[in-house]
Image (cartoon, rainbow, N blue to C red; front, side):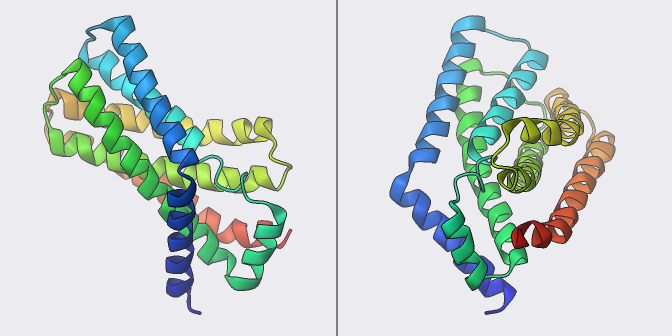
Length: 219
Protein backbone atom coordinates (compact mmCIF):
# COMPACT_ATOMS: atom_id res chain seq x y z
CA UNK A 1 0.00 0.00 0.00
CA UNK A 2 1.11 3.56 -0.61
CA UNK A 3 1.35 6.16 2.14
CA UNK A 4 -2.05 7.72 1.44
CA UNK A 5 -3.85 4.36 1.57
CA UNK A 6 -2.07 3.38 4.78
CA UNK A 7 -2.91 6.70 6.47
CA UNK A 8 -6.56 6.50 5.41
CA UNK A 9 -6.88 2.91 6.65
CA UNK A 10 -5.26 3.74 9.99
CA UNK A 11 -7.49 6.78 10.53
CA UNK A 12 -10.54 4.65 9.74
CA UNK A 13 -9.30 2.09 12.27
CA UNK A 14 -8.95 4.79 14.95
CA UNK A 15 -12.46 6.07 14.26
CA UNK A 16 -13.98 2.59 14.38
CA UNK A 17 -12.25 1.72 17.66
CA UNK A 18 -13.29 5.03 19.22
CA UNK A 19 -16.87 4.61 18.03
CA UNK A 20 -17.06 1.12 19.52
CA UNK A 21 -15.71 2.02 22.94
CA UNK A 22 -16.40 5.78 23.24
CA UNK A 23 -14.52 5.55 26.52
CA UNK A 24 -11.93 8.24 25.86
CA UNK A 25 -14.33 10.61 24.10
CA UNK A 26 -17.02 10.35 26.77
CA UNK A 27 -14.46 10.81 29.52
CA UNK A 28 -13.03 13.97 27.98
CA UNK A 29 -16.51 15.35 27.24
CA UNK A 30 -17.43 14.80 30.87
CA UNK A 31 -14.25 16.60 31.93
CA UNK A 32 -14.99 19.57 29.66
CA UNK A 33 -18.61 19.85 30.78
CA UNK A 34 -17.70 19.52 34.47
CA UNK A 35 -14.89 22.08 34.20
CA UNK A 36 -17.11 24.63 32.46
CA UNK A 37 -19.79 24.11 35.11
CA UNK A 38 -17.26 24.53 37.95
CA UNK A 39 -15.92 27.72 36.34
CA UNK A 40 -19.46 29.06 36.09
CA UNK A 41 -20.28 28.21 39.69
CA UNK A 42 -17.02 29.77 40.87
CA UNK A 43 -17.00 32.99 38.83
CA UNK A 44 -20.57 33.51 37.54
CA UNK A 45 -19.23 36.31 35.37
CA UNK A 46 -15.67 36.93 34.17
CA UNK A 47 -13.89 39.65 32.22
CA UNK A 48 -12.69 38.87 28.67
CA UNK A 49 -9.05 38.29 29.69
CA UNK A 50 -10.01 35.72 32.33
CA UNK A 51 -12.56 34.18 29.94
CA UNK A 52 -9.86 33.63 27.34
CA UNK A 53 -7.29 32.27 29.80
CA UNK A 54 -9.77 29.82 31.35
CA UNK A 55 -10.78 28.52 27.94
CA UNK A 56 -7.23 27.63 26.98
CA UNK A 57 -6.56 26.04 30.37
CA UNK A 58 -9.61 23.82 29.79
CA UNK A 59 -8.46 22.92 26.28
CA UNK A 60 -4.91 22.19 27.46
CA UNK A 61 -6.04 19.62 29.99
CA UNK A 62 -8.59 18.21 27.55
CA UNK A 63 -5.74 17.69 25.10
CA UNK A 64 -3.63 16.01 27.77
CA UNK A 65 -6.44 13.58 28.54
CA UNK A 66 -7.44 12.94 24.92
CA UNK A 67 -4.27 13.20 22.84
CA UNK A 68 -1.38 12.47 25.17
CA UNK A 69 -2.48 8.85 25.60
CA UNK A 70 -2.30 8.09 21.87
CA UNK A 71 0.52 5.58 22.11
CA UNK A 72 0.30 4.82 25.81
CA UNK A 73 -2.87 2.78 25.32
CA UNK A 74 -1.34 0.69 22.54
CA UNK A 75 -0.15 -2.75 23.66
CA UNK A 76 3.17 -4.10 22.43
CA UNK A 77 1.35 -6.83 20.54
CA UNK A 78 -0.75 -4.31 18.66
CA UNK A 79 2.31 -2.17 17.90
CA UNK A 80 4.08 -5.22 16.49
CA UNK A 81 1.02 -5.94 14.35
CA UNK A 82 1.06 -2.36 13.01
CA UNK A 83 4.78 -2.73 12.32
CA UNK A 84 4.05 -5.57 9.88
CA UNK A 85 1.25 -3.69 8.09
CA UNK A 86 2.18 -0.01 7.75
CA UNK A 87 5.16 2.29 7.56
CA UNK A 88 6.12 4.37 10.61
CA UNK A 89 5.42 7.58 8.67
CA UNK A 90 1.85 6.43 7.99
CA UNK A 91 1.33 5.61 11.66
CA UNK A 92 2.52 8.95 13.04
CA UNK A 93 0.67 10.94 10.36
CA UNK A 94 -2.56 9.04 10.99
CA UNK A 95 -2.24 9.60 14.74
CA UNK A 96 -1.71 13.34 14.26
CA UNK A 97 -4.66 13.66 11.87
CA UNK A 98 -6.97 11.61 14.10
CA UNK A 99 -5.97 13.59 17.20
CA UNK A 100 -6.48 16.84 15.30
CA UNK A 101 -10.02 15.77 14.36
CA UNK A 102 -10.69 14.75 17.96
CA UNK A 103 -9.40 18.07 19.29
CA UNK A 104 -11.50 19.97 16.77
CA UNK A 105 -14.61 18.18 18.01
CA UNK A 106 -13.76 18.80 21.65
CA UNK A 107 -12.87 22.45 20.96
CA UNK A 108 -16.15 23.07 19.14
CA UNK A 109 -18.19 21.54 21.98
CA UNK A 110 -16.20 23.32 24.70
CA UNK A 111 -16.33 26.69 22.93
CA UNK A 112 -20.08 26.40 22.36
CA UNK A 113 -20.96 25.58 25.97
CA UNK A 114 -18.35 27.94 27.39
CA UNK A 115 -19.66 30.83 25.31
CA UNK A 116 -23.29 30.04 26.21
CA UNK A 117 -22.54 29.87 29.94
CA UNK A 118 -20.44 33.04 30.22
CA UNK A 119 -21.74 34.94 27.17
CA UNK A 120 -18.59 36.94 26.53
CA UNK A 121 -18.62 38.78 23.20
CA UNK A 122 -15.81 38.03 20.75
CA UNK A 123 -14.82 40.99 18.61
CA UNK A 124 -13.55 38.97 15.63
CA UNK A 125 -15.24 35.56 15.57
CA UNK A 126 -13.49 34.19 12.43
CA UNK A 127 -10.05 35.03 13.88
CA UNK A 128 -10.96 33.42 17.19
CA UNK A 129 -12.13 30.29 15.37
CA UNK A 130 -8.82 30.31 13.49
CA UNK A 131 -6.98 30.41 16.82
CA UNK A 132 -9.04 27.42 17.99
CA UNK A 133 -8.17 25.48 14.82
CA UNK A 134 -4.47 26.31 15.14
CA UNK A 135 -4.62 25.42 18.83
CA UNK A 136 -6.20 22.05 18.09
CA UNK A 137 -3.49 21.37 15.50
CA UNK A 138 -0.72 22.48 17.85
CA UNK A 139 -1.91 20.32 20.74
CA UNK A 140 -2.36 17.29 18.50
CA UNK A 141 1.08 17.53 16.87
CA UNK A 142 2.95 18.22 20.11
CA UNK A 143 1.25 15.68 22.36
CA UNK A 144 1.19 12.93 19.74
CA UNK A 145 4.97 12.96 19.41
CA UNK A 146 5.50 13.34 23.15
CA UNK A 147 3.20 10.35 23.72
CA UNK A 148 5.20 8.29 21.24
CA UNK A 149 8.46 9.07 23.05
CA UNK A 150 7.00 8.43 26.51
CA UNK A 151 5.51 5.11 25.40
CA UNK A 152 9.03 3.86 24.59
CA UNK A 153 10.14 4.78 28.11
CA UNK A 154 7.58 2.53 29.82
CA UNK A 155 4.93 5.27 29.72
CA UNK A 156 6.98 7.50 32.00
CA UNK A 157 4.66 10.37 32.98
CA UNK A 158 7.57 12.42 34.34
CA UNK A 159 9.37 12.22 31.01
CA UNK A 160 6.21 13.30 29.24
CA UNK A 161 5.89 16.37 31.47
CA UNK A 162 9.56 17.30 30.98
CA UNK A 163 9.34 16.96 27.19
CA UNK A 164 6.00 18.72 26.93
CA UNK A 165 6.79 21.83 28.97
CA UNK A 166 9.21 23.59 26.56
CA UNK A 167 6.90 22.89 23.61
CA UNK A 168 3.55 23.73 25.18
CA UNK A 169 4.62 27.02 26.82
CA UNK A 170 5.36 28.92 23.56
CA UNK A 171 2.25 27.39 21.99
CA UNK A 172 0.06 28.62 24.85
CA UNK A 173 1.65 32.08 24.79
CA UNK A 174 1.01 32.39 21.06
CA UNK A 175 -2.56 31.07 21.32
CA UNK A 176 -3.47 33.39 24.18
CA UNK A 177 -2.09 36.43 22.34
CA UNK A 178 -3.80 35.48 19.08
CA UNK A 179 -7.18 34.78 20.69
CA UNK A 180 -6.91 37.94 22.84
CA UNK A 181 -6.44 39.99 19.66
CA UNK A 182 -9.57 38.32 18.27
CA UNK A 183 -11.56 39.08 21.42
CA UNK A 184 -10.50 42.74 21.30
CA UNK A 185 -11.42 42.95 17.61
CA UNK A 186 -7.99 44.25 16.60
CA UNK A 187 -6.93 44.50 12.98
CA UNK A 188 -5.96 41.06 11.69
CA UNK A 189 -2.55 42.27 10.53
CA UNK A 190 -1.60 42.64 14.21
CA UNK A 191 -1.96 38.87 14.67
CA UNK A 192 0.35 37.90 11.81
CA UNK A 193 3.37 37.28 14.03
CA UNK A 194 1.44 34.96 16.36
CA UNK A 195 0.02 32.98 13.44
CA UNK A 196 3.45 32.59 11.86
CA UNK A 197 4.95 31.55 15.21
CA UNK A 198 2.32 28.88 15.83
CA UNK A 199 2.45 27.50 12.30
CA UNK A 200 6.25 27.47 12.44
CA UNK A 201 6.17 25.44 15.67
CA UNK A 202 3.73 23.01 14.06
CA UNK A 203 5.94 22.57 11.01
CA UNK A 204 9.01 21.95 13.19
CA UNK A 205 7.16 19.41 15.38
CA UNK A 206 5.70 17.55 12.37
CA UNK A 207 9.05 17.40 10.55
CA UNK A 208 10.79 16.24 13.73
CA UNK A 209 8.12 13.59 14.21
CA UNK A 210 8.58 12.27 10.69
CA UNK A 211 12.36 12.13 11.16
CA UNK A 212 12.41 10.70 14.68
CA UNK A 213 9.44 8.34 14.81
CA UNK A 214 10.86 5.66 12.46
CA UNK A 215 13.78 5.20 14.88
CA UNK A 216 11.42 5.03 17.85
CA UNK A 217 9.22 2.55 16.01
CA UNK A 218 12.10 0.15 15.40
CA UNK A 219 12.64 -0.09 19.15
